[in-house]
Image (tube, rainbow, N blue to C red; front, top):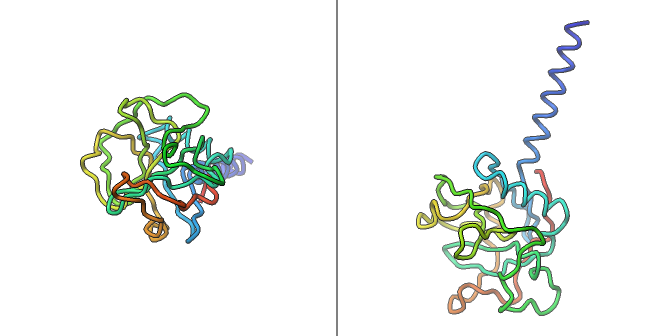
Length: 186
């Protein structure tokens, strides 16, 4: 009986670990296919929790990639203005957040490489909220200046197909691509 209880407890532990591991991923459905991001809750627990909560609530669904710069990054996550069906205005692009308070910086020594996911912010280091970006290429100049929340582990080829913005207008995108659906887990 004792062995059976230990086996059952072990199975529950493994099931719990598997569920926790699944919760450390976000899947973004793009027009060209899925993108799976492994979240790093050890490095940025508050930011990861915020992203998971927004995804679980459907806040990221249909949100535009409002700023996309070739050879640099694709920015999205403006849940306030980014899901407007018509007239997503360039002047509003990137100015919104969520209804939650801004987050304190969780800077780390994790480098910004191709596929790294970081939180967007204003000049105030403690102003990240809901917006994030995915790196097309390394960006060492961002290291230690922006919070790293994770890394794309599959689907980077779909990120590479996101519509680019106007270089003359700081990467602002007209008729932008969108995150069709964002879910917690793989």
